[in-house]
Length: 139
Ligand code: ZN
Image (cartoon, rainbow, N blue to C red; front, side, top):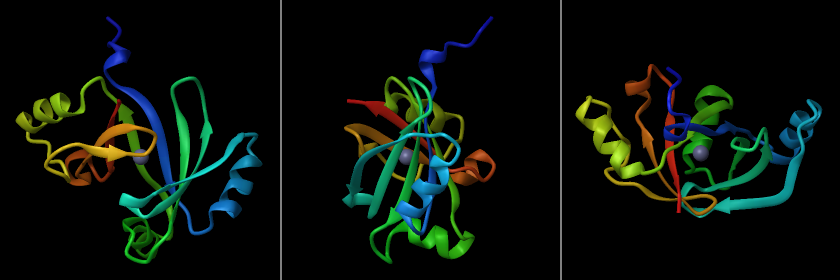
């Protein structure tokens, strides 16, 4: 039986970059087409550029806007690269409660407002073999 893809769809792959426009240029060489709009997410202290991969998924480049941004800390430690994977679920809080029963740890106690009018929370990388996973729900 096929899994129910509606329950967990890849929404985006987030990549931490030092220089947003330089990275847009590099990834565009692959044939990807970036939205000309840039979005600043104040809560995460990042500026973002988006490009669609298919009807469900996009790549999100994240440039820190501030030295205290967690993205800046990631770049300082690892030199940039894939920062997190985000999966879209119908109900983030419900999914969080289900996963917590299985022993999965979340970074924030409750979902909060993310970019693009979504409710999000992050699973601690220790619970996902070193991968930071975001869960997102369209509002
Ligand atoms: Zn994200």
